[in-house]
Image 1 (cartoon, rainbow, N blue to C red):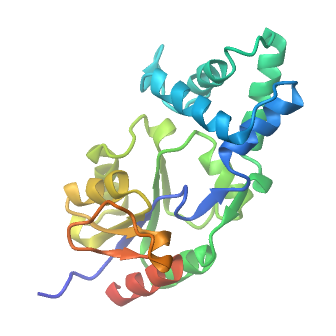
Image 2: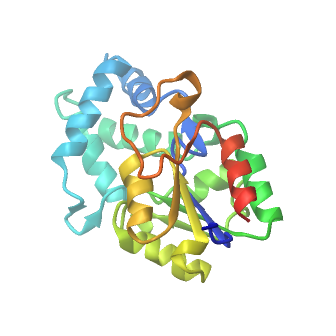
Length: 239
């Protein structure tokens, strides 16, 4: 049975369309070192993981990845370093600035071409991303702010993947039925399984597939691509 014709495409952002350069752990380590905290990116990664797991989704009424939540997160990351309140405020402000600056991000090859091709095909194009409220400003810094019909950012929507309500919200904004939409992202559970749970077609962007280092997680029908060029071809074939 042929697949239904696509009318809408939804995309994840982090590690799908773009990535941090250097890594977020290296950025935190760089800012820490500038304030006298000697910590390598590998240790910072462990610190950040512990801090993330120690904080609830909603903290004092503030949803995950909101500024207030991140202020608590940054405090937890640096709690053992003895920073003064003034130094901690400065570190927080510097990190907030780094994570909306164009210099901190790189588009993956084929990202602009993918967006342009989807728009040229007349499809509705939306973002579904677990991200801070800075996401619209990040997209603007990358020259992509006018490329999408809507941006669903978890910190703004106060919903995050894999919550099916976030995908249902995207369907309502796109005014399409689930089978007429496709979502692509790099996470098997948050992107692929979550989208399929509400009937949306889904594709895993698995860059390890190009070198044989595919994700351990499997998808129901094995739909995965190794880069954005392959994703573009798949979308155009279905539109």
